[in-house]
Image (cartoon, rainbow, N blue to C red; front, side, top):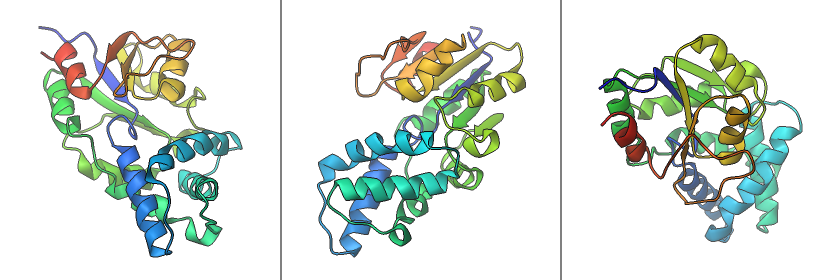
Length: 222
């Protein structure tokens, strides 16, 4: 059976990497070291509310985005974190774990003859550290540091399109906001890895809707 796509690009954090688990653990550990107790159930919502705001304020290294996001999110949780204390989140990022199905799904797709890529809102050095978790290789890697902007801005997708050319391309991601909506707007086929069963945003109905990376591999590399 011929694979329906020549290349699949993936968002990394939230799609391949369990960023929520990594962020929660980093916040709880750093707070405990400062003698603080914060509500574990509010950490991700606080982070998710702040991060896009920080990214829209103008390009800065993602390490700096994480620090400023950590500081503002901590304040919303009652923890008055100073800028000097806020580097804990970036320091923890290389330890954020892949989802349980990530490696096996990537290897199945690659074994079916599909090339792989990553389009990520991150710095080069942080992604290099994360890639040590993966057994599969990636032909194309586009980072925020390369394109000097953050998704949902189109620069990642335009840079990838230049490198991919006329090959059949699918972009797969968990974030409807950061990935599916902007890719759809550019006419790029999309796969939404909708682990939480969320409803799509306007313009965010994907070409392919699955709950896990394993399901994506089942559909494209049976």
